[in-house]
Image 1 (tube, helix red, strand yellow):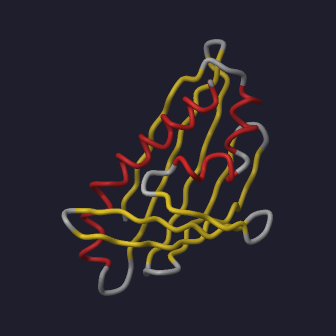
Image 2 (image 1 turned 90 degrees about the horizontal axis):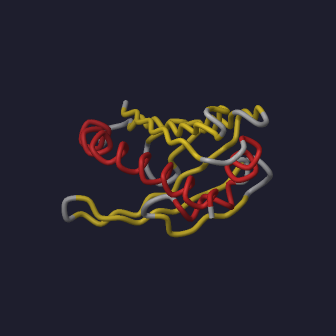
Length: 144
């Protein structure tokens, strides 16, 4: 399993952070390698990513399902591979701190099946970068 977390201090109120991260359609396009997504219902969406890693081009489809919303402090989601055998989850937390909000994004991915042994090392390399970039992009959009 690969796990990554990134935190950032945002000089805005906690409710403004919540208003952004609680709506997937607001931040889906900020995920690195994002291609598109489709809202299935209020809590479930299907996402498509395309990217290159070490010369290999890969298209990945996954399902994101919101499993817990604790307004205004956290949103938790599950990840399920639709094109590949993987699963995982993640969370955004927002805590008031120093006149602003301290936001943490956490993602974990577990690759299964025969390809899991091959994919896990690659996921461990890219997941921290993706998590960091996404959290920083969300922070910039919230401040804009």
